[in-house]
Image (cartoon, rainbow, N blue to C red; front, side, top):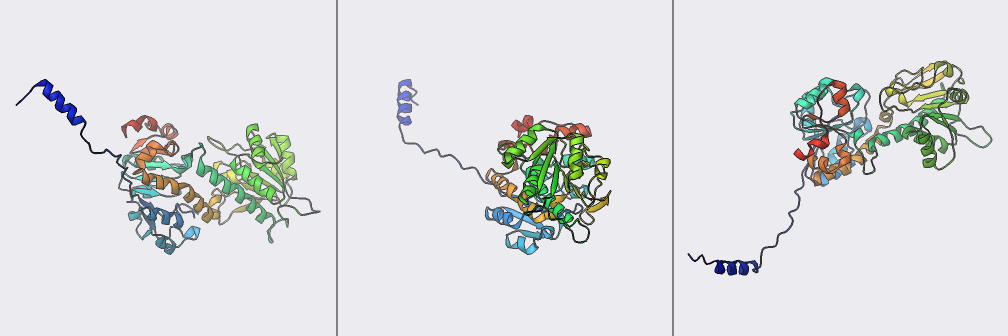
Length: 406
């Protein structure tokens, strides 16, 4: 064999000039999602995670969707609606919970986790205040990737679903108040709003967050006179700017608040607390001084309520009267308008699920979408939520620190 260095050099140079096969970028393989939508079993929960229109969109993109029979009945969607959209209707709950992705509205129960074989993705709300430790430990043991939709952020850093639920609660609270104050059997006989020559309804809204903002919009739209109170000036300023018109605003000062409530026909409690219970800012004495037949809607009741006289009610028996004032204290207002709320959830999740499929699955979406990653509280059996770790004394790791190992 000729091993002359000069000859080898010439052969290599000649070979480098020969035509070569073009190297094209290999397209990422799309993933076919296998999604299960169970029927909600929580008390008076009527929403459904995905509406038929979203199911049709997912199926058209090659994904498989299984829906438990009667899952959409509470939001007035029939099994036939889902079947025509391309979903597979399942009588067995076990079959739903064996899907790679299980998507529901309320947090998982102990029985639901038992039905899951493991190594799956579970998407639902995360209610830290009522989250049982045993459910959490079972999710960890089964190496579930659990994602809280109320912690997912959009491109602008907004908690999309939390804001949407707040918008629904704000609008609906005013509609409920209007219904109660004009009730033929027990109302004050007033129309919420105002007409020419008649003094408008006096509405006091406590809290200038999303719920307070949309309650203010709804009340102003009906012609009511509105006063908004909050404990942060920045929120009051933002509310005025967002609404685009001047509205009475005030920092929560007991004497000023008491005077406004004494004159009010309707009071909406919309204060929120980032940690723990909502501050109780309206005393029983203030309620006693309200006009007979007035209405209170305590949207903050799921965090304890901001009225001293509040107590939890439900959709079957939503009101009670104390000191001549009608109280409405149902925690889950969104279930009252379950169809609208279900569409809202679906509208936010349909692009996320489609992107998940385009990227080949949940893992790639977690890696690439920081807002979606923010909702992960368990990743493949590793707890990644600091609050849950401290509350239940469990080991946890920051999701961003384990991402390189995915």
